[in-house]
Figure 1 (cartoon, rainbow, N blue to C red):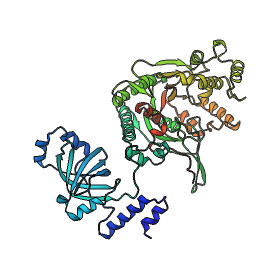
Figure 2: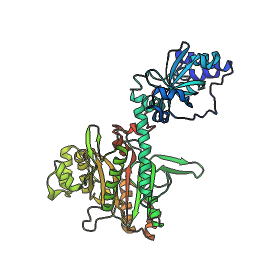
Figure 3: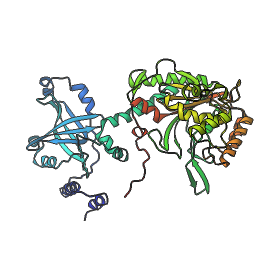
Length: 504
């Protein structure tokens, strides 16, 4: 039994695979290598279509323009003494014409062994068919890669979402819409970099392995470094390291980073996700609201051609000034809790939560209880871009306390289509206050809060050297891409989303 056959049998052999393996062996026996290298096409399909689609057959054919193309075979028809092949490269599709007269008996016989999914290389001249389709009339032809597995049925593509996510390569081959989403994602990230570079920010990279949990409220993934014999966490946020850099004199820094949070999986959540995080010295959270509006508006215009987009049938307008509303006022406006005089009353809040059946632990203070109401009753109603401001200090361990109202912090979160897309605040740069808040986080962790932060003594030491007045923000790239590509699930914008292990 051949090595190839053994490999494929380990991966669910079927009749079509058996036939392809026989063709593979036939190629080898004839001296035709089934996995060639060293062939570089001179042209791409889209470039050819852009340049020659408008030209008439009568003027194009006599020019005998020589080209070479390469790509995956997506369709084959009419193999008698001639046939047509649809070839897909990275920019689109081009038709190839093969005929026995031009290629000779031996090469043409190899053409007849072709399967959908094979990758080929063709040299020839351009011409227009009777139906005015731009086509390469091949003069040389070879199979570069023999495909051992059939592609999904062409006209239905991959409709099973499970297959699309688990076998993304097939999704990209068959579904041009999916390919367009990820091209657009690349464009969005490139535009974000350009936006911040143009404003004097410096891109940096910070560690993904942390010895201390910090920078966000989240449960971490744990790992172990064998050489150091040291437990480590995959980072939940780069925040504390980025602020160390501001202490060091890099006044404007940003990182497009991978974060890891050991949380549930949903259409909005993936345990491994991409975040833009940036910090600007001598700025406040209010400055970042203005910047965020401008950034999102610029991205919408560049990517979608308009500051107004449609997401899942709903119009989202990034154009006008966005609503800015405090947590307390949003609760009073959108929830069933209407008593303004008791919006900070622990007893009244606890009674309300218990009446509604919401989770309320004994350790929860008025700030956490207020946020429970917000999460349960308010968040999903914030469809148009909305800045929710003045979060309770109790749930904002790294935010600067407001000078006029010590109960709240100088913080905002941005909500669009009922989802949090960004989180920002004026940074807490008082090391004494920061240490006290860390200590409360440690107490909360000891009491069972798995999302609480650790004490970070070195970060306190950095603040003692002096952090200039600074504002920082994190923006979820995945959710932003969802909005700008009208994608219903976060898995649609992550090339390889985390999946539950498949049952045998």
